[in-house]
Length: 285
Image (cartoon, rainbow, N blue to C red; front, side, top):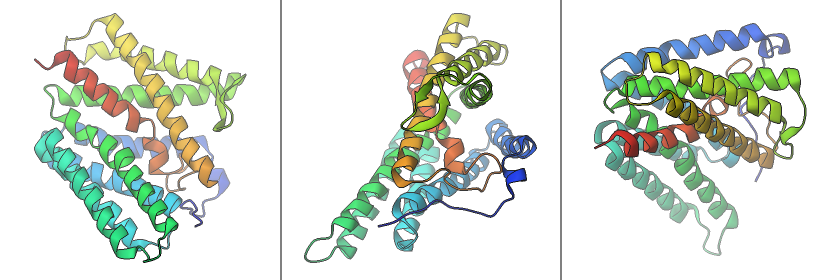
């Protein structure tokens, strides 16, 4: 079974240029900020479904291949069920949507399994299940954080800190270089970049006290942001490990200079649930 990433033909001068990277960043930030601020959950649900759906498509093509369109369609359907459940029914709806997605995968396996056994089919379904726990489940925490009291501020905080940690790691690591952080998984990531990302996260987290509700001390904000930088780096490395196992560099070239949507969401997939449960145990009565 062979798989490959999603590729588009884009000139290197544009794809690797700093201008293209920043333009894409701004283009993604504008609808994200609008969705966070609008009180109606329909806009953020639509945006999350689109972004998560593209990330799921990249994941499916990369890890399950293009020869199983039915499985990819079920993956996207299961993702929609999970996201809608989280948006309208909260954690219970998220669990119900996830169970429905796994149920669809089980039906698909029963349908395609050969009478004599079929290791490839079981392998595909295992990747399908992993994708739902990894993408559908973890990304749905955007919708759960949104409905907290002061949810828009909290959501803006976790996305901003995670993004700034990524940016800090890229710029510091590319300039200072030095020892590798985890060379066998991601040869371009350095310890200096990781430390730069941590410092950027702590600085942005400290400045976030100006718009967050008065529930966190300055020290707590700094330490909380440091923790998010750590989990964001772990999420980045986890995605890199999956892509390296499949011989893929970028999940796609849809976003100039950024790779694909899966590449942009990899850190958030781990910081969102961590921050959600921190909020849950910290501020929920």
